[in-house]
Image (cartoon, rainbow over all chains, first blue to last red; front, side, top):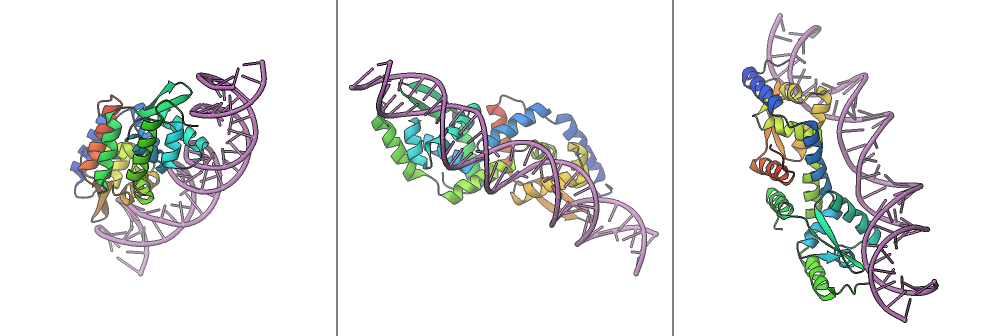
Length: 116
Length: 116
DNA sequence: TTATTATATGAATAAGTGTTCATATAATAT
DNA sequence: ATATTATATGAACACTTATTCATATAATAA
């Protein structure tokens, strides 16, 4: 059952965990945020946009793949508030939404010991 | 095509993006890392473990659900190096792998303006 | 208006994933 | 050795999701 020799400590931790647990809505939002940036094709777009804002044509050129696939991914990123869009004539120009995004990427890279 | 009035700037950004793009393997690893923490049930476990190490029984008590489901999620987190396990007699005691995990959660919370 | 260019999107399909159920392994107790 | 307790895991099913293809919208040019 639970007689693990640390029964009391673990039981207290479990009790504290229940008290301090974020509500379902918060957990869902957090999960959604991470899910948004957890696809190689979308990360590629984010790394591309670190070089500066770009329109869809140039994003597609930078990351490869079809315009349609890129547009679909841009929508996911936009609706997840990871990037923002502005119209400029015939073009839509995309850019990273805020500094948190860059910081998240940096932290994850650090966790994995990679240099980006 | 690409005559967006910013053609030159965007073209240069695209070129830089291609040069500085992480390789596929890095992108895949990064995506996998985010994917690992992008499920409410797994985030719940991580928030629970912020209160201290716990065995499976108490984690299950803290987060709810069945022992089997929790065990499956613990495996995903463990294989993703987000948590670590050590045996203590009959029990397996889990804890957060390193400080990066806590920092990631904090950053994401900040991004969403929540208090955890 | 008609044509063209840039981007977005709906539907379909294929691949991935979380939970449940039943069962297996591993440690300990009798 | 057998039973019990703690945890892990394989298979199946339901659900989600990324890409492709075809088409739609929106801005501009002729």
